[in-house]
Amino acid sequence: MAPSSATLGVLDALTWYRATLGEAPSHAPLRKDLRVDVAIIGAGLTGLSAALDLAEQGVRTAVLEAGPIGWGATGRNGGQICTGYTVSMKSFEKHLGRHGAQETFAISEEAKALIRERCEKYDIDCALAWGYLICANKPSQMDDLKEWAEELAAYGYDRCRIIDKATLEAEHLGSRVYHGALVDPGAGHFHPLKYAYGLARAAEEAGARIFEHSPVLEVEEERDGGIVLSCAEGHVRCDHLIIAANAYLGRLFPRLARRILPVASYVIATEPLGEERARGLIKRNEAVADANFVVDYFRLTPDHRLLFGGRCSYTGWHPKDLAAFMRPRMLRVFPQLADAEIDFAWGGHIAITMNRMPDAGILGRQGRILYAQGYSGQGVALSGMMGRLMAERILGMSNRFELFTRIRHIPFPGGVLRRPTHALGMLYYRLKDLVG
Ligand SMILES: Cc1cc2nc3c(=O)[nH]c(=O)nc-3n(C[C@H](O)[C@H](O)[C@H](O)COP(=O)(O)OP(=O)(O)OC[C@H]3O[C@@H](n4cnc5c(N)ncnc54)[C@H](O)[C@@H]3O)c2cc1C
Image (cartoon, rainbow, N blue to C red; front, side):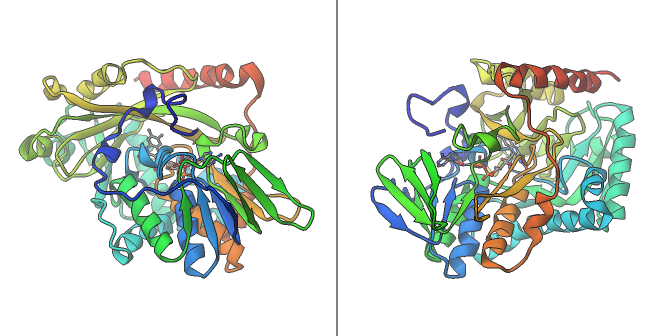
């Protein structure tokens, strides 16, 4: 989905991230024919992470991006760096056995560490902060949180603790709506678009080429195994292709598109509240999410705004006035913000899979086309790691990528039933969130 005036919609309004990006280099579109070892479709966290690792190993790499860097979910998300996956590790055990599930959990931990390492190594200033709360909207969710903490401990991650309502309100949150929380000091938040531009800079310094405003229109595999990507004004010929287009893939690979459903989520950012007022909302600068199926997520920004995200559209319908649509949601948690202006409101597409586990695979006659998608709302950290795993496979350094290819996925129904069927299914979970 390229950001031309023809495609810009209500979701594509200026984000707080782009407004605060500072000086960012722009990259010319592809206007020639190019020969590289690896081409990557998409300059989000998945694609840029792979580009960096490949370029550092001397691999000739080109990234083709339909919009500017981070145009997709990477430049629109809540910036929350989460522990584990969207679903319980039990789901991974069903597909991969206990050993495989343990490996995938270790990879999710490495995903968080990778962000920290890269910020340090490449001097990326993206307001990285640690500390995370998952809050219970109703008493029964306290049991879910305890279960989650126990499951994580069984996987060797014993950093989480459960706190009651009184402690939550006294020490963490200026809100009275929650019944307690899980505190996770090993998860956190950052400015994902600054991070993405930091990865892009490091990748370019290592030799990668990045082309913005260059949607790939066609991909063809040639008899000799070469792969040719066609853009409007040039072609790239490569030996390996990484598809890192996620929910923004469109119709380029219908086979992949069927495996995910792009679901919209919306984010608002208040006016700057001043340090004292902002700290009164989230006392320890933690990232916060609730324990509902349709999650509310929020955090502070370095310029003392509240950035609040949530709601979901499975139907493709979006409210015209996102700020008005999201505001009541924010005021439910923080009624004291009734007088606060909303300065930014935007949305973006999350790629969900039917089983909410990431979808990765190997395509092409010679197995030289790799893809990773469908992080199901928890891809900020994982995307970077999936980029790394695809690079490792191409470099022949590890077979960790194959682990994810063993997860079985059921495609979403096609045709006119695609969205309504799933929207109906999700109604059950929304009602479950509401029932006490
Ligand atoms: C509103 C919102 C809130 C979220 N909040 C969180 C959160 O707090 N924590 C969390 O963990 N996850 C969150 N996510 C999910 C997370 O942002 C994504 O999982 C992650 O950014 C995926 O990165 P990616 O690089 O795979 O995809 P993207 O960032 O979507 O990048 C794909 C890129 O491919 C490009 N592209 C597509 N087709 C083509 C083509 N034909 N040619 C060239 N380029 C193409 C697109 O323009 C796009 O830039 C959120 C997502 C949204 C939308």
